[in-house]
Image (cartoon, rainbow, N blue to C red; front, top):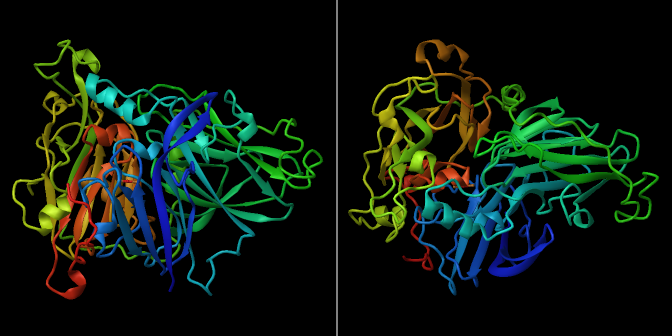
Amino acid sequence: NKAHHHEFIIQATKVKRLCETHNSITVNGMFPGPQLVINNGDTLVVKVINRARYNVTIHWHGVRQMRTGWADGPEFVTQCPIRPGSSYTYRFTIQGQEGTLWWHAHSSWLRATVYGSLLVLPPAGSSYPFPTPHRNVPLLLGEWWDANPVDVLRESIRTGAAPNISDAYTIDGQPGDLYKCSSQDTTIVPINVGETILLRVINSALNQPLFFTVANHKFTVVGADASYLKPFTTNVIVLGPGQTTDVLITGDQPPNRYYMAARAYQSAQNVPFGNTTTTAILQYKSAPCCIGGAKKGTSIKPIMPLLPAYNDTNTVTRFSQSFKSLRKAEVPTELDENLFITIGLGLNNCPKNFRSRRCQGLNGTRFTASMNNVSFALPSNYSLLQAHHHNIPGVFTTDFPAKPPVKFDYTGSNISRSLYQPDRGTKLYKLKYGSRVQIVLQDTGIVTPENHPIHLHGYDFYIVAEGFGNFNPKKDIRKFNLEDPPLRNTVGVPVNGWAVIRFVADNPGVWIMHCHLDAHISWGLAMAFLVENGKGLLETIEEPPADLPVC
Ligand code: C2O
């Protein structure tokens, strides 16, 4: 097994989009950042050198980090930030994961421009569980602001309002043909007649679940979040931020130019801005327009696909219900822990000393968000993992509640007013090493019902069931799939509904679980697990690296 060494230089770089030039934070001057390709079983060693004026950390989204929690990356959770002028080397091994993962900054809103793909191929000498594709094509879906994303977040924290929505969706950093000043640089994916390519679609947008489709072509879905699936075909896929989906697409249509397009499913602000669509172009090399290279014939209009409406939850449900893991799943059937966690927004009172006496959230409040009515607050003097490792008291407590404080009607009209105002806290939930865990994630309709992409660090989990309304343990248990449920690191909890996940707590460390809509994590829609070290060598987390940043 190989070790791959990389250097990531975090720096300000001029990036021109939508007719304007911005000084964006990038890795090695690239936007999106470098693509990493490795084989299952290989080790990555990435030295991150911070030459920007912001604190930064890098998270390897979906990498299990078995016993290497120090390399996970979320700021103030597993490490202190890498300060301007300093560096930190992330070192970890990919074990038993194959497919598409990605990496992104995990500090403020820097991930708007600091992200890239991480492709994990089968171990050298072995093959995919499907016919070998002619090519791998990662596609990063994203969001672009005509502003500094760090300032967008700061402004919303200052006023209590929702952060400004982005100015464009992007594919590989490009808004594409339908946006101003963007046609020239539209991403082009070349294909030959008869060729099959493996599209590795990643939703790296900050706040937006997205539909993705290609005109006149069918997808065969073969994997998601670096786990293989029983193949199924579909015209459209949907991804919440954080999620990845691998699809095969074959050049079986008349040689021409076809749009690949992504558009909003819902929105963080719950407004129907589905009229904004980002595009790339699937271009047949032998199309009459295009012989002689990608740039030739760019005046020929590509064929436009149909995309679902922004509120088409039926399509989302049909899609997620098609997910079955390729092999028989190892779902825990007995449980040691059974948690019920509500996820939703809230409205906190404006602080007394607030300048204008009114915050700009609903009715003069400020937006907040919580799990089980606890709005998660990150520490600032230690990371949680460092505090745990060195036995520093006072940084966190371990009283995260296993159930919401009051039982209520989560999705109906009788939502308890007491749950509109969560308390802030740095509350962890202790899991014994090796325990078998079930979590019911329940959306609340507080402020607005939404599909929340809930991401757990350090683990993959089985999604054994999902549904709408209030979870009913007696009735809904009949829907549980313990045979071949999908294994993922991020679950889109249905709008006004619930999802049930299961996993075995076999990775010691501190692991944050949060909504991958950055507006929501910024408001506290998170909690963290402390998976306690066992006594044996394998149950123990590795020693912290010598260059681990201190706060
Ligand atoms: Cu991809 Cu904690 O995030």
